[in-house]
Image (cartoon, rainbow, N blue to C red):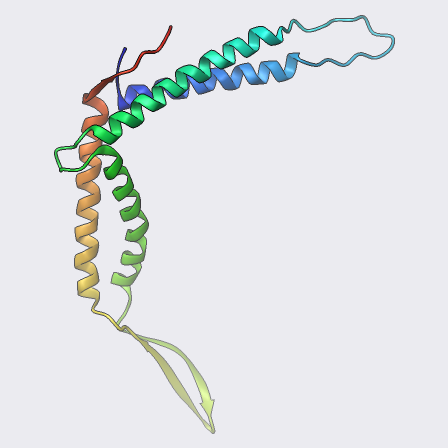
Length: 168
């Protein structure tokens, strides 16, 4: 069966949803409570049946995730890196951008507070120990790289296909 990253991810989510549903049904039906004077109404539950269905879903999920992981490690994007490298780099850049954003917006000189030195207040100031223009350049370069990676991933996720043997 052929998949794109996007369709594989959607199928994995559907399979995991089915598994979650079965596990919840199993939890509901595998035990029951009766009072001493109640008529016995035992829920319809067959452990073997549930176990086989859950194992089959797990096998499909494993197969699809493995195929997706292999695809991500061997598929080179037009920007010159594999999908898995792109995902790691983008995560790193997205963690880095808030720090750079804060640093590029900082004032060169900030009054912190005053303290009393004898009879007069003495102001304290905090000064930047870096050039915010350099930080701005780095921020912009990193932001452009995130956009470049995201566009390449978006296109790959929707258009590039791989094969995975999933039993219906």
